[in-house]
Image (tube, rainbow, N blue to C red):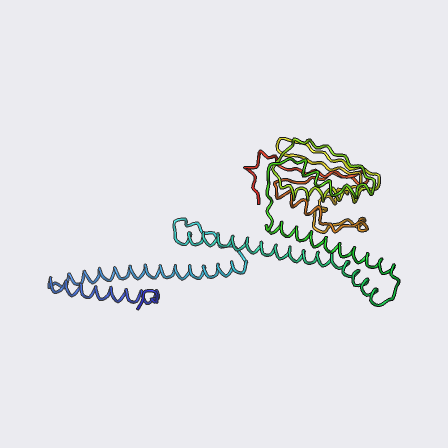
Length: 352
């Protein structure tokens, strides 16, 4: 019989039988050697006392093991159900304390994993809901245009107008998908930012190049104050993307003949990039919401956009150890301040 198949009750029974046989043999041997009943009685009393002590110890140990196994099973069930953490045991030198301590650590890991999975599920549901909401309008418009072209005869000029409208909706869908791909890749770590010490001037110039045409169409004056000798560790491509998104919003929400000012300052710990516009401004109660994915204020729904630019900008800046600050007043424009850590702290920053 292998030791792995022996139960505690069977081991106790075999141990008691073995101890009884040894005791009988010892008593018989003592009688044969001494030929005195007194010695036999004394030895019998001693053996009885030993057996009683062993039996009491085994019974106590068995009771402790049964209670511990019951508590262990109950605790594990509670942990799996997420009901409650393991109870605290303060017998620091006991085996039960050590096992309980490990169970407490296991419970914390399970709880964190459960919360992480719940958060990821909620974020995924929110993302799916947001995407469904965003694609609903362009898809409905495309269906309507397509049905009109198929069912109603119309002159070539009118067909061209409908096709141009359809092209605009397709571009909106493409822009939405590209923005979502960029965001998801950054969030899941598929794309990692490669920070290199380089001038911020060139990065800012690349971002400005994307908005100058739209600014000229609205006759918006753009002024830039950026020293060419300011360098810091940053990812040029993605930082330019973040700055472009902020500048693009400034152009969209600044009326014709307005102004946009961009200034760069080198501080001790950070490089600060201020983007100030003369637009409509943002109410103080909404300044914390504008960085949410797909958030747009109700009064600007007639302006082209999907509300993901600022969210993506904040993600990019945060992943590089920086942050974005907003100062705005309704009717008096807004200032978005981007803070990026200086290059001298490259060795101490935690990067993704």
